[in-house]
Length: 529
Image (cartoon, rainbow, N blue to C red):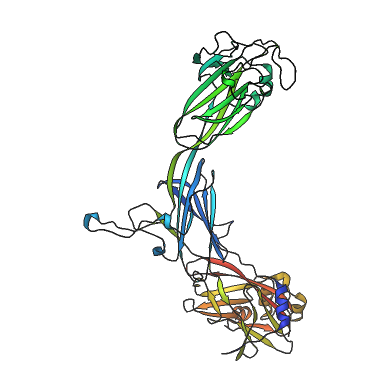
């Protein structure tokens, strides 16, 4: 057939106003393809979701098993199994290795440092020109997943202590040792501090302080074991009156004490009044797997009338076991990895000696190229302005009986071979001019030959045209729906020259040779020629 190009500025302008045709995918974000994610070969920990929008393929890891998280992910997508990096066979005889084991460290998409507590992570793969006509994608989705557990370490009167008096006490610096006990709790502690602690309780070397006037220094130690790799820790602590907090020989911080306090008289210059209700938090950055040790060097201040409170400017009262109590309360929440496994999205086995797997994904069929052509005599053909993506525009003249519209294997390409068949496309009934059709004898309950068929077409219950695919998905033709259903005739789509002008949306479903469906929309705007 002879093919000519024709342009029209008015058509282009109306095409832009017509908008973009909508493509609905077989696999969408809301309804993706889901592949089980197995850790340690047979433990289901989640799934991998795959979908695409025609421009990109999205692969999303989802860990759903409680307390399991993503540590690393490795993804590779290719158009053949050989595209996925794998070991090669080496050696001879009994020492020969088979090869065929995937190498995640060489995959195209890698994240080996996911944030803590990551359960979902997505990669976006662009469907470039290289992949537009690929029928099948080969996907290897590998992960390292970690199981995390939480432990609490808190004041519970199991700590050991070493204590001495303030320097003004008789027998100062003579050490006392032992195991901590539950401390007497001041009413202010109970009201203001205790509600902030879930596990910890107040402890001291004795139920009541031994030296309420000259004060005491008490060092509490607790060793605890973390049965895995620590990833996060937080300490919360309160002391009446001041402290230094240490973890594994590294000081975390201090409150209410000044330099030299440890061997001082514990007066205001060294131990500051007024911090007894402060709840301080520290990040535990130097935790290790195995044994760890907290050391809390705590001070109960000197209290007597010869000492001035730096905040009030008034003399301290003479200390008693009631007005100068001593106590430590703390708790630490520690998260650690107690199990780590490699994981693969389920599918076919790699050829090597391993349990690694890959799966295939078929992109739903779509038009990578769609051009429409038209004629008034079925001899000379013209290109219809516009595109599949943005819509087509075509001029009509009432002086022309029919315009014939079609496509062919020169003007249509798909990303995946279509199965042979007749794919019906339907109008949007709300876009139809019923007055126009009524004048032609097409109305509800009409009789006649072709008229009842046309009534179904304009109401969206019969195809207005068919896309005919034949010869193994290599030949294409647009057939008139009325003539095919009524007269059983395969003829080009016919549009009357006096057809009502406006924008029309035609929706149909095509199917690939792999049985994957895709519902697509073609938009045509008809204007006056």
